[in-house]
Length: 181
Image (cartoon, one colour):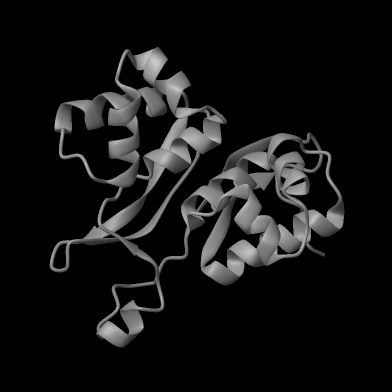
């Protein structure tokens, strides 16, 4: 049995993969509108959900979270790049896993909240351009990075991933909803 994914996880996966809705749709021969519906409602066709899940998993993304079928409660929903069980010893094995130069997936966090850059910029009184730079990993502004990360964490988002000091690369980068205590 394949578990259907929630809209939040589908948005995060597409963002991590760096695909637009149109690009994701083209890869699995559906309409961009079907992707939009899948990412903005939890009422979508089973076939669309399964096809999107297969696309993202084939790219190396894994989905996270649990569902209590008795109560319908979810916890920890999100997505991340598949992680190695341990640090790859050989460069050839390292290429099997997606690596990132930064361990914080700001764009995926924004995706999880389902907000535009302009909305986040307005909430933080920060330039939209700065949000874009931080999302792209192109800014070394530690103060702005800390403000943005703190904002997302207050909103209930947990950042995922771990780094290799030797290579300066991060594995398993992604986001999920933080479990409530």
